[in-house]
Length: 96
Image 1: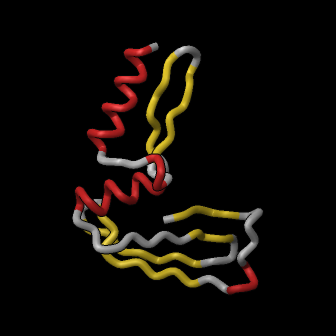
Image 2: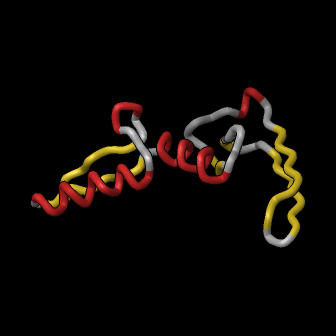
């Protein structure tokens, strides 16, 4: 519907995202269009809104070891060791 198109465009503009930069997608759900933010869009919003200089992500494969300390529910220190030979993409224990 034309209203759903307007709402999807507004959602894109409010978030300051650009589909040409893979920051989001327009997706049809039945007869309605919705804007869905992508992973790249989430990174862009996080960097802009939280002032993050960089965002690093890592996958934890089976056999890896993760130790962390937290304070008030926030991880303040993290140590992750992983053997290169353990990088089996079929066995992923988590990600951060």
